Image 1 (tube, rainbow, N blue to C red):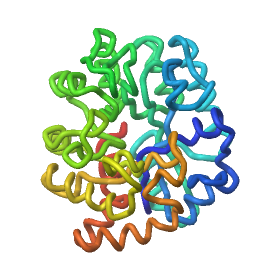
Image 2 (image 1 turned 30 degrees about the horizontal axis):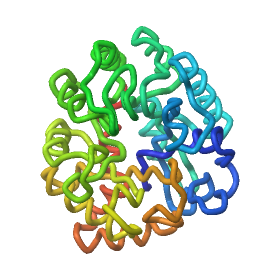
Image 3 (image 1 turned 180 degrees about the horizontal axis):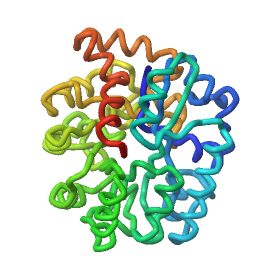
Length: 320
């Protein structure tokens, strides 16, 4: 079973009309059928909402001006997932049942909120947990909770409250998109499961969107996971990216983390970019990626990177 730890499925459908249940839209990669063809059995399906300041960068009119609007948008995305016959994994027992009964073509999801503004206040976190959210990344750009990509800053006072509420509710922390100062604040405060769903190696592609070796090592020390994005600008400083660039980041992050057991996939395919800006143009290329990884890792390590590392992390981190 291949696991992809970051797909903006509902965002693509609602903001751009690229529905999940048919074939991929022309020029794009992800749909239910394409994931089945690729052997993907579990995805981290996001609740992503774009702030109004992102309109130009994200080429969308589906944006929010305040937290209430963000909450309405994320609720629409939850409802979209429930129309897709996409089982939501909420605890370790459900995960175990899915893994044991999995066969090619079956797909389930774990809900990941990317940017926490839809949570109007930390006191409302329980309602989102009831809707199925199991992972939260507090930032995208700057949010009310955290500094983010191209928006330096630490956790806000509200962000500290959110992390405390997440720990009580057994919600996993995703540090992707968090600014360096916010990551440092989180390391001081956070004692729960931690991951980076779709951030690559900063040594290979400079910029605050990627993670440092020190951050990778600390996440690994805490038993966390590092997901590799397939977006060309996350894989290379310039020019088109290939599967070899994914392998290059996997090797680098494995060395930084002290082992490949902390490395997995978080493709972000179709998440604001089309196939021509991706290292992968068709999900059937997952098999070719496995073969390329095999040149650098053992067979069991490749199996881990392609999926079982994420399954092990969830088995340790989801509510019992």
